[in-house]
Length: 197
Image 1 (spheres, rainbow, N blue to C red):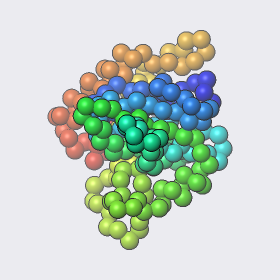
Image 2 (image 1 turned 45 degrees about the horizontal axis):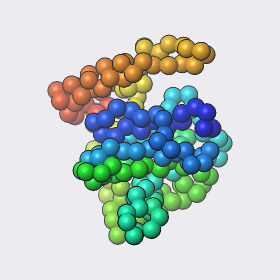
Image 3 (image 1 turned 90 degrees about the vertical axis):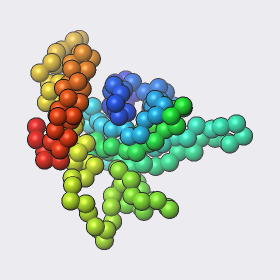
C-alpha cells in the first residue's frame, strides 16, 4: 500500500497534499497541516480502492510538548467505500501546525467509532449525528465535500495524461481549478448548497 499515494488532504485555502510527511507503518500515514488551518478535506485519490473490509480512520495528532508525554491522537471520523471524502475541523494553532493521521483499519471498527457520541462536545464534521437530533436544512458536510471533490474531479479529468503507465494531472491544472472554484464561491456562495455543477 505504501508504494502509491492513497489519500489527498486539502487544508482549507492550501494546495492538495498527496505525499505523507511520514508513514510509520504500511497502513498509517501522517500529514503535516500548516499553521492556522481550521478545516481539512480528506479523500481517497481517484482510482484508489482500499483493501476489502477496511476504511480509513482520521485522527488529529496533538504533538507532545515538553513534559506532556507522547502524542495524543483524537479520532475525527472516517472515509472509505460509500464515503470517499469528508471535511474535518482541526483548528490548528495560528503559530504551529498540527499533524493529521490516517490509518487503514477494519471498516467495522471505524464505523463503530463514528457512531459513538464524542465526549463533552457536539458532533463534528465526519461523525454521524444521532437520529434523534434535528438535522439542519442545509446539505451535510459530507454532501458539500462530495460536491467539491466532484467539481474538482470533473474539471481535472480533462487535463489527465498518462506517464509511465500511470494517469497524472499537472499541478498547474489543480491550481487553475482552485482559482476558478474560489472565484465561483465569491460570486455565488450558495452554489454548493444547491448542487450546481
